[in-house]
Length: 356
Image (cartoon, rainbow, N blue to C red; front, side, top):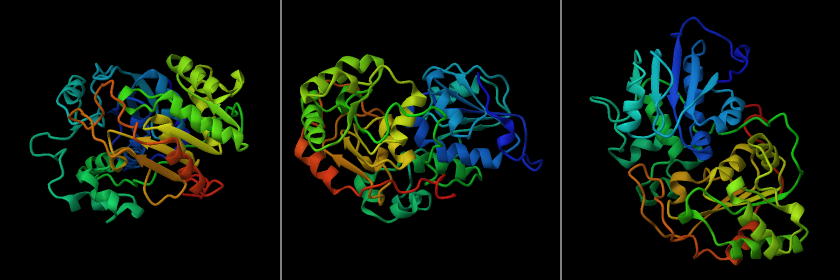
């Protein structure tokens, strides 16, 4: 476990001390959408030692956020290697398995959805989410789309039920200390954890070729497991081998690349949330889960979410279930290129850069 500089936050004797553990043992997008809730917790308990139970590979981003003091390497549903914390917070899901994993730590207090007499995972009425939605989201079309509650708003709602104020717009991430591999790049990220969310490589290649022909410096990113996919996209797009960065960038280097990038193109995956965190213009392809749940905050013109309009199977927490069917196929390269052409140029300031 690695800890951040404890001097970064001013300590207060007015809130309870001790260890707080928050469970969010999922992926990069899950961590980034939980930042407003984690930062609310940090402000509410400034003298507590806050630990995030999450996979170890996410530690650089968790510590970069400034919201937690350390990371406890944790698989998806535990066990959580913390004993008798003052507070355990379930930011992982509705339970019961994730809640049971936290109960096993014997916390003095437990915050989670669907506890007896507590806050419900399901909204009783659509307006119940309004006060937790980003300002530009309130009352808009996205709030009503398919009855979806935004992932960010859900966890802010849990915090609010326990008296913790959150800012759902607080999604920015400080830039890492490492320099970007290349600055001003157009980043094409063709992979994704779930096959159902992926767009065909040939489609990505058509977009990458068109952008490279139009003077974009295109690079292709991905995990080590997606290296061959990235090479296929680059080869079919006519890009040089050096354009393939998949498998060769660490997580901090990926953050630096996106922060310094001019454009990001990706499916519904964690890299898209990095674009939101850094204010990097982006075009993101969604399906089966609509952008009303996982997309960038509406009203920010530098981020465009294209949705196939197709709903596939989903698990009880709303995530896409494993499938070999690609429901983003109805989106065409022409759709993506039109969205790119309509994007504003330049980076708007992130929360950090605008002094928030």
